[in-house]
Amino acid sequence: MKISMKKIDGFIASDHRGFKLKKHLKENFSLIDLGVFDDKKKVDYPDYAKKLCNLVKKEKSRGILICGTGIGMSIAANRYKGIRAALCHDVKDAELARKHNDANVLVLSGDFTKKEDAQEIVKKFFNTPFSGEIRHKRRIKKIDYQ
Image (cartoon, rainbow, N blue to C red; front, side, top):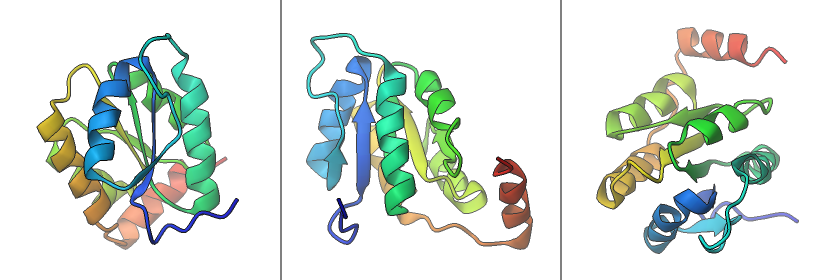
């Protein structure tokens, strides 16, 4: 399945604890939702990190993952070659994750991130380009060693 990235901002997925924040973000951004689709049943966050990371790599796009703290999703996502997932708590984190690390997955905490803050963090993440500086490229190459 080929997805046109011109019409969407990226992909989004969450576990049950990130569902409400994900639902809010979908109202404000054009995102392809990979699940979960309600918060009634407890699920395992690595399953949703896998879905999103595989599509982000395949489509050369960006994504958002949300779980309770954001820590589990960060750990799971960063296990995938070519994925640079950044747990961001504020707009400055999102800006630097993009500028310096060329992060392609934004991770948010469903429990601790306010809806209004999340909107601004996502906006900054999607609108900040990678700086492309040699020192940052060199560092990223050292991370992508697998």
